[in-house]
Image (cartoon, rainbow over all chains, first blue to last red; front, side, top):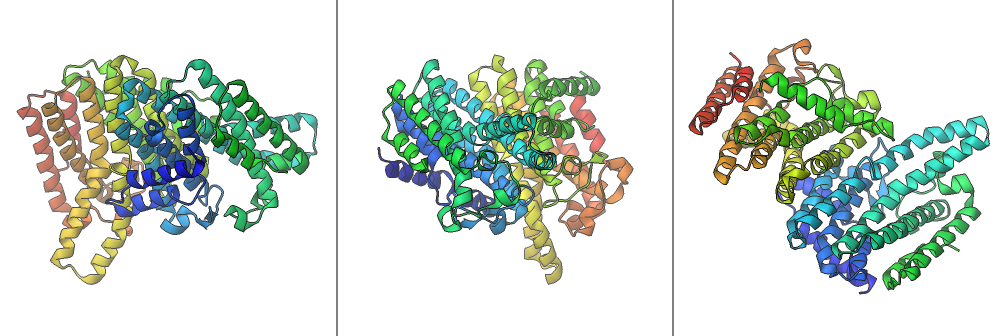
Length: 300
Length: 300
């Protein structure tokens, strides 16, 4: 399969899984952010992981789409005025700018349970044991052990960053900041990548060893992806990224670039990408899709 | 079992299910609202439904506690400034007043997936089929087909109510308002009662007919409960209710009292309570607990 073919399947399936029914405004708000133009990276990875471990990627479609819905949920709530207060996302107005804050909160809430509902409804053929395993993976990634842990520490790190700047850069504090940043990237970004790749692999009956390798791949890819995002926030334009940029710097936010500088960020990004290629090769996982994703986030 | 014994079991179990781990502030925020002093009506009903249909109520404890967590989730988000903007709940400061708005949004989000995670983790003995049934019930009640549908229409009804007042009370609009109010009460309140009673019954292996009867009971009880709440908002004091009162009236909110007046509200409340007693008797369901709950919401 080519990337574009996967993306087309995902977009078509999401459209079918999300009819606009009464009360329309909440279903419209949910669908608005899920269907914003995007790379569909997480669902693509879910389908490809399923294929790569010998499964039929069609079996992973509901799960893949559910993960894109969960991802949209995190975007809707992260963009709220009380969080990052962003007006644009993927070149379009954010959810609360279109539907109002109350509906944006509720649309996010609704997606959190709508997504796994889609899995249960359309993946009955997987059998009960696998469905329960997928539910466990989903809850773990979506909740206070996963993306929410990352978001909480991200918010709290702004304060930490300020106190760091005031107090002068002594080593012990620097170490704390480095650990904190790793924690944020792991949970805020890599946990959804792990969810996508692990569930795809579980659907394909991957064994424990394969699951552990693909989790390692997801961790490295997730952190690489977030470092690339931090770099692009610094060097891109609004037109290229579709969201307000330079905010990280302005708000004194803890990012890879603010902590390590632009040059080391680029270097570490490429080291992580190479590590991902190594994991694929070591495990004899031949995937044009993963290679394409890895090459796309490389920055020279 | 007596009401107090059930409540004690629920409080003790919630405390055990919710340890405060890193990142502490989010787990503290989650636990804060779940453990506010309360009647634990929904989890009590879940345990009692399980017992009443011949099950062991111990098997329903994780599910019962999860439903109380879901209930707390709806309270945290409903109280947010962009929703009902309430400062007090059960006599204490609301979640965002203590932890800040960002953490309150995230605490609610986290509870939505933490709750079913507790069910999967601590109810393995129920078997996979029952666990999946419970998940389906949970997602349905928690999402855009359940409580969120109720909350959305509740928010939107404020506008409807205003246009109703401006335009003079013609019949067609009155009918629309009546239907809208029934919809709000059904989803915002009765759906969680249904979840509690249906899952308790499912755990006890209740048959389709029994499930349908208990759903009917939950619907009537839920609407009765909400009418009682609307009446108390009008006639009680802050000390009695533990939250800011008279807000419904002040904000021109659509409530049973604003639509039908105080006298008819009281009359209809008692009709619904009698209906609930009838369902219990007709089905030979002898429950001191349910009788106690029904008698408590009666208003003379």
